Image (cartoon, rainbow, N blue to C red; front, side):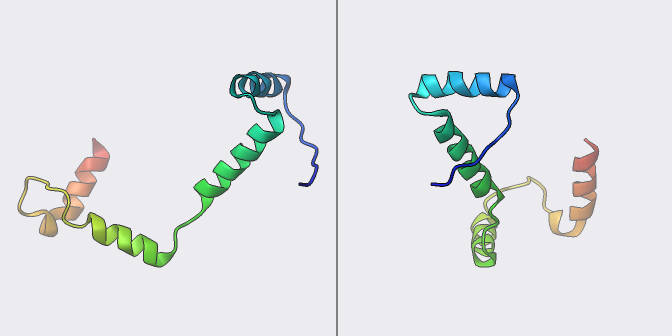
Length: 82
């Protein structure tokens, strides 16, 4: 592992120390976990994965109306105004 220097506010460090004690891990471990979580959240799935998810979702939901394919823009506009 590489050593880095990070500057935190007193409040941030205090909160990290409390959480680290509660979880019985080091502050460094909490920071590593936070970095990993941020990296995972920022990862964009590959195009084929996005396509697979979209196809999986298709047809799973019912709107209760029969003209959604013709009036989808109006419905979307109404939804954003709500």
